[in-house]
Length: 401
Image (cartoon, rainbow, N blue to C red; front, side, top):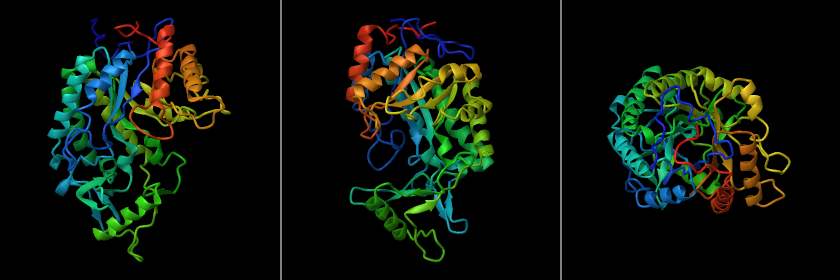
């Protein structure tokens, strides 16, 4: 089996494309959101029993890159006494200083995953360090009976990015250790993603002024009851949490400093650095991330046009190239389409064909194991198999040079 091209800072394997075919990836994107890596009450590594069969399925489909969320909302980064605590004075969550948080279980689990990827070369992992839910208000994780789990807080890690000392300590103790492991399996890593869709919780983005505790009203009520049980209040008058709470948006300058520092570390270790931008329709965000030091741009494409499923992938490539916003990949696009007049199969096929025609270096459909309104993996598999048979999807052992 041919070796994957060695990654170097000036390597072009991420941005070139075979003359007649397009590389394709897939969003895994987790076995259990927020608890794939690290210690928690539900048992460790929920993906371990299924990972081999999943990767072999992807290998048969000639999947080149698997995108996977690592810390996600942070629920396994600091648990028990190390979990974020509610600060009654500032009425918000405060994260434990990172130097006091044990990360060895997280790093060990990540290395185990890389060993699995090593077996299926040339397929590579695209790990996403944190998700934007990391920045949302903390909520207690709930057990099957709807009771709050002691010391397991989802989100509530906003100050890791705002506090410069915590920010540096977090990157020193988490990212650096993950990069140390990554270097041992360098051919199994495609790039490192710093954060997924941060624009949702940034001041420079036109976001709603409130966030729902949960889209399911019944779950929201259970979360509010959990706050009351833990004697955590939000409103100093009513002593209660509303279902819709004010959104704390990260200042752009703090996000820039976080991404710039992380990108520098990633590139110093010989990997490409990227951010999963939520939109390519507004190219100012791609410009922002490029200015932060990322060297592999990425956007997520859910902007369907007139029911035809063309989205931005068919429209933006030449424009982005002209603006110097390359290399750029499509890190997410739906496989279940909302506003369409054709089947999911037809629209996903059209999307990939448009991507090939417009010379995108990599497109990554959403997603494999989730059941949401953007996912139809069975449909996507049929399309991928069809296009593989046509030779439109890249089959080679190495990245096309």
